[in-house]
Length: 404
Length: 229
Ligand SMILES: Nc1ncnc2c1ncn2[C@@H]1O[C@H](COP(=O)(O)OP(=O)(O)OP(=O)(O)O)[C@@H](O)[C@H]1O
Ligand SMILES: [Mg+2]
Image (cartoon, chains in turn brown, purple):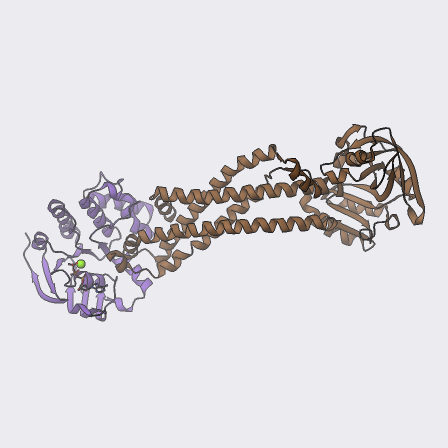
């Protein structure tokens, strides 16, 4: 009965209800668009830095992350393998040997990250093969390398050219090798393209003088949101000779940048919703004041104050939720449009983005949480403001209201 | 036992000049009465009805409804008491604007948690009783003032109250509608034995009451039982 009454009361003053609905939905649209754009940027950053390269979780020998040398590499054995394989959340793993090396081309020299990787596994889990823009993808037994596009450009080399790699190997040995370029690869993150050289893992083990050792085991997860959980589960199982890290530990800068940026978004949202709260509050004060006489009659004929308050409260909550739903429905196609048609930036802007190591584009996010979040905020606001009639009706004097 | 019994009932409104709106009123109203409370404007009719109806509290004296002392009830108990024992008809804007005639009548029964079957049966009967069987689905704005007051009477009766209090129920009606409303109230009184206590200014309404209590400055100055006509 209260619900029916509330619903009908809402439509008594159609224009006011529609204005309130519109205000709420505009706020929701703005918030959703902002959060969708921001989250889209984060997702893009995480995907192109973490997803394509670092991985959402890694296993190392203890101490490797602080001192990334071949000496701190990990002797891979069956017990590590069985622990990884026993976790239901882990889809698979790919071993790597990562180390800095000096890359010498005909006329140029540059430091680069030389990665020994299992071509089959990188293909399966990272689709690394799809990043080849020139030449061919590596196979297991190749004695050739793939070079990041940016790095190739800097070194002025292309496929079939030869590079000399110089580095430090296991236990102070020196590592040196000469490799032809089999392919050029390009990453979503320009920063990565400027730094990476891939070598088949067997060849890398030879190059660095390690046998059956890796520096990093990249864990591929069924659901990237499980990174923290997976590391927490795996850590005690692997013991203290190993370190298990999730992406937030692997890339704290990225994590912090996202966190700082999110705060900005929340401040904007807070201000927006403050304004909306005042609007809703005003609507409610009007609803209360213009129906005083009616409330007086209702109390006189025996309606409990609590029921009266619930009715007004429902009215406000219904308007707010309708507004939130309308906002989400209207915002969705816009987000979807920019999800399928990301915005690319002009060159000036592009540079700024590329300094962060990501591609210069905004691809909106369609993460349902963004929409749910707005709904929940609106719900909380309306429930909060809606508590006001509970106070107000307690003090309502039936006779006075009816005389008015 | 009287339905309503007041004893040395007083109500003073404090202000720059305190107003004694009800002054030492001793009053007994029995079952089946059809009683008008009359008097000039400001004589205390509304105040008296409000106190009897448990809407307002006296400054001193007592008011009993069916032997229950209203002074002893808390505010929340009074709300429950009104719902159960008293039917109200006010001068105007009695009805909930967003509900139809039928829903308005049903409303108090919903508050009392009456069963669906009983509600349906009773609402139909009541609206027929007040001659609105063809207006059950109209909202108050679609009804004339007289029709609205008839719905208000139906609603007042829906809760099966001990008596109905009506404060100037005909004040905003033209004489024909007023006449009609009074006919209905009288018939309900005679046929169903429903006790009505109402205030009025209207001489034609006064003429049809069985008992007329006249107030002046909050005091009862006459109490006449007259023949029906
Ligand atoms: N809430 C109040 N505060 C102060 N004075 C009041 C209040 N209610 C009524 N009065 C005063 O009490 C007196 C009686 O008022 P009441 O409304 O009972 O008269 P009434 O007989 O119903 O008059 P009317 O015929 O105009 O409706 C009046 O002098 C009025 O001014
Ligand atoms: Mg009056």
